Every structure is written in structure tokens, then in C-alpha cells.
Length: 173
Image 1 (tube, rainbow, N blue to C red):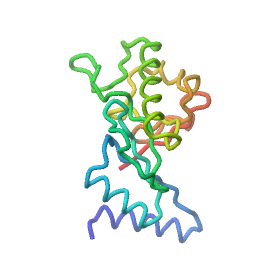
Image 2: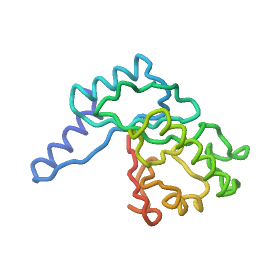
Image 3: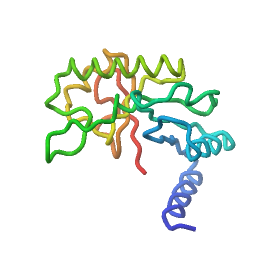
Image 4: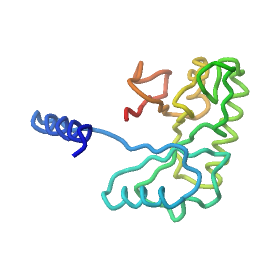
């Protein structure tokens, strides 16, 4: 077995031995269409009754890409168009510090409306920014007012609630 997987299984065993339960979630980014690889992933989640969160790029989503709906799959908003708007030399981000909050919020609203129109109620009000980063920290404080209840990036979260009404649940692998 791969050493990383063995370490993972060992950690779960330690939790079990101490009477604790491990909570985890499975997030896959950049989903736009149900290609063969993603279809296998969705089937694997369903066969094992494990919830799968797909971070979907609204601008690239193909109509009816995730129909029929799989009960184990929920959709999250993966930015709007996955275009890098960072200044030359800065880390990639769709939401740079230089962008006006009103402009970013308008783009997010357009993307969310497209997702809801194409997928219905399967979209959770969670933002997964491309490249796992929002370089405009002031934008985060406006997410709840725009209808978002969650934010997911990568690594240890600085706070469970980076802004009032917005829960942060990150990936770590």
C-alpha cells in the first residue's frame, strides 16, 4: 500500500480506538461536463454511499451535464469563469485585491444564476474560488450578503467563520 494511504488509514484507526469519528468531505474541482473520468468518480461515490461535492465552473458548465441527478453529488460554485485576473507576477486568482467588490459580486451573482438555471436546487451556496484563493479579503465579508453560506479553499483555515454567516470548510489533500 502507498505510504500516504497507510498513514491515512492508521490515523483513522487511532481516531476509532479513541472513540472519535472522523468527518471528511470529498471535493473535486473544475467540473464542467460529465466526461468518462468524472462519471467514474460519481459512480464510485454512489457505490460507496459517500457524498461528493463538485466545484463547477459556471461559465463552462454544459447544460444538463449532471442529469440525471445522483443523490450523492452536490454542486458548489467554482468561481465564475476560472480566468486568472491577478497582476503579472502575483499568484493566480479570479478575485484579485484590485477588483472592485461590486464587480466581483456581480460576476458571482451571474455565475450562481447560471448554475441554478442549469442544475436547479443541487447547488449549495458555497464558493470554491479557483486556485483556492481570494486575494481580495474584503470580498469575503460580503459573501453572506450575496447569499453564500460557505467558503472552501485549501489548507488549515484561519477561522471557522471568516466572516459572519460564512462557514469555511477547506480541503487538505
